[in-house]
Length: 466
Image (cartoon, rainbow, N blue to C red; front, side, top):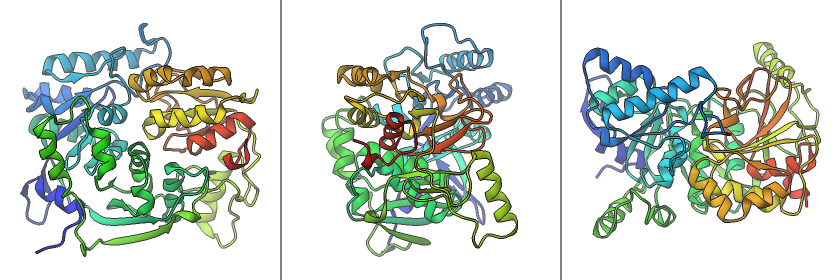
């Protein structure tokens, strides 16, 4: 019998038809939408006189453009307001479930899907957003699609896709003190580069991965796209089942037992072949931070920015251009650099575990005077828990303030922009030029490292801050 990877098992079960020497017609179980990439797709449907085939398979929420203060008031920005209004109108017209601003389950699309139990093992999930890969943490095939594909899913519940190549990244061993899943993925991307997984779907495996919580696994899968991968996934296990049990949309009673029995089969077969494999030792991973303008430009916080030794031609020119934008020099230490902003949030690290980690670290401390700190929950549920657990009080006593849910300062599509020339240490997923605002300088790190930076006012190793 053919040995199959987890990716093979899910993919093959969703192929409606294969086009000879071409793509597969691929069925989609769940379609997440938001206010940015859906309006044109809805407009094109109307022009063609076509409806949404399975509206019950689509879930919507506004997140990219929404403000994170005064959400009960009219959105000031005209374009943002219009996009949110269009989403409401389209969802009502097509009978699509919408978790709107102010509702109990509003939030970032890749945060609310898992916390509601909409995301489940064995599913195929798409969204007009590259970080849909987040949902792969549950043992699902999840990836971002373009506007024309959003329209295709609306109309047919299928898309045309060429099956990706398969990669397995194994991380074995125990993580050291102060090291988190964000450090794991930044370490991996630094090792294989921001293009190292292009054309692949990545399965993460090994004892260090299995030891992670679901929220930590989501962080790993979220940033798969940042090394060029089509997506990432982790085989479901007891951690997955315990997380999903009792969620609003999780199966109940006998259906739950039946589902778990099926989900247990979602494992890569012993002897299944991957197109590429990497192995890493968890003991070598330390608190990480980026220093350049792509997520692959990362180092351990204690290390110096790489020199130009051995670089030639366009590679050297591109490298120096990136450092010039960041205001850094080759060979200098990154630790001790002064910072202006810290941001905890996004679909990468805007979950309750992230808020807890920051609150626990800053308890009894004060943020540095030079730091502006934005703490943005990924959903109303995260915000609610932060209040109930006393985390908000701890953060406020330390000089922080919790904002309202949304994508916020992850990307410059709303009011939460970093001013030009300023440095922001961020728990988000991208550090491109202008990603957090025109001229903004972004350094990616874990929530724990961000907390250490907030307290010291400079780039710091969290293991050295007490």
